[in-house]
Amino acid sequence: FISICCLSGFATVNAQILPDHFSRPAYSYRSEQNPYYWKNKKPYDGYWQQDVHYQIKAAIDEKTDIIDGKVILTYYNNSPHDLPFVYFHLYQEAFQPNSYVSELNQANDVDPTYGKYEAQGLGTEVSEVKIIQRNGKNVNETTEMIQDISVLRINLSQAIKPGESITFEIPFKTYFDSGSLRRRMKKFQSGDFTHYDGVHWYPRICVYDRKFGWDTDQHL
Image (cartoon, rainbow, N blue to C red):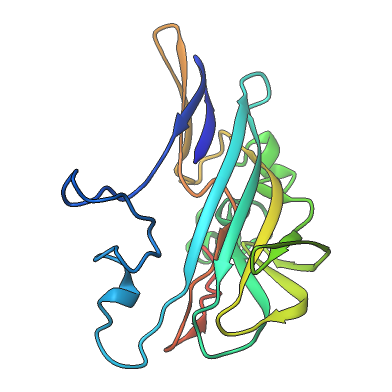
């Protein structure tokens, strides 16, 4: 369930996998009855990957061009490892002065212009990350946030053990702006209507896999 604010009001999108035939019962993504779920078609013994479920509610203020939202994210640790911390990508944080993107531009003799929000270092801002469930049971835990430009590390009070799940609540704000850098966040007029096009506008948990561990590459 994703609810986002459009010009004409709120639009609700429900995403689910449909059964192959309508005579069969519907099933959830992680179900044993879902033939497309990775656990039901492992390429080899011992293979694993993590599962993530996002619920995002967000609204755009057309006067300020700011997205105000909240992510409810459930993370399933299918790895054989304890995870005492997790990482998130904050892609829109890359496009500001004194960032890694800024250093890359300077190295290539590019002098970008920044919009009013970008100049203040405002891309996707996360005020806190709370844990509201562990293994489906309600909890109320705080976390420690450590941010390096477009990568946010969240230190947990208790590790996520193999086979466990954890649910995060993450309020955030993302700022549309008009700088020269290609953020893939675009605002434009079409007739009498204002259009907002954007990707990577919410906190996105990093990939954790067998080969590389956490993907903590900066967005460039």
